[in-house]
Image (spheres, rainbow, N blue to C red):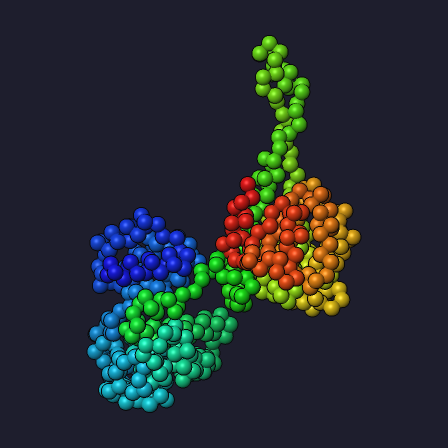
Length: 481
């Protein structure tokens, strides 16, 4: 148990989950007060001690299942497993219906359930899904893995393809359709009741998917050990996912992190403006206060500063080279609009267009993105990046509207396709604005390589930050003090 805990904590630290020495000690001590046979209790206690962020829970759950993988049949209730199934077939002693338990043979195992063909086994699965019989669900998942996963012992893989092979044989979408069609109340239920029933069936099918994944994972651990499997399953935490290589699902998952970051950004910028200087000297009050010291103005009195609310101009590159980053920047701009007194949003490729009204009127960022793509916003000529022309167009149309209370943030990779970068425009913007920041989604090692001109823009920015993931964006916000 302690060795498994040590391995899990090491792997969690390896992928970036912060776990201190004191938290590790607390985790070890908690085991002294837990029934170690109760796997759920151990998991809940360790999660409470080691996980401090919701974004880290999925990583913890996956690694716990690896390092504290139950032995075959350990999760099953022998009394439940021995009960007959929905179609009258008897269960087996440990919830594994006579399966071979091997790591990937094609044998169907012994016993009455093991002798069923795939069609009959699918019917049994449907009955288990309707009844919510988790014991039978796990047993059938193990049998389908036996027959269709074709696990190759010793192969250093994460097992994703094994799961795919198994689910392809079962066809979860068809299962869901048959569950809905076979419902006795399907014809009568309408509206909310039918929707709730559908969600219940979807949850059951998802439980079967998870049971297949858990079975494949368990067999991989039996074959190669938890540490080796953990290395093949290692994935970055949500805050470490690279914007330029993230999937659509990962971009969507970032929404829960963006909103609190925008609130913090608004607060930091407002505080920075508020404390940047004191108000003007109040000469009359200073002289009045000096009477107590014989007319010597020991403590000057200043008028209370009345800073204006900050306004924000965001210029976002939406060219193809940063397409996934563009999805993130639009999401960021959509969230920022509610945190500042005024947010002006612009998108550019080789031209530049203001999309402030689009983001204000759109119900969500997906609708806003669809509108921006449909109207070709930010495109002037051929749709190839031209920072120089985009910046010049911005200055000609909106340069006079940049004021001393304006913070400008440019989001882009500074790759100009070898056009004139027009850094003089950026210099003019910096002279008029309160702050000018540049967030670049590329690693610093790639700056100034090829057509990147980041070094030519950097002198005219208050700060230039590598911003490849949420963690670096959070670091940028925390540095605004």
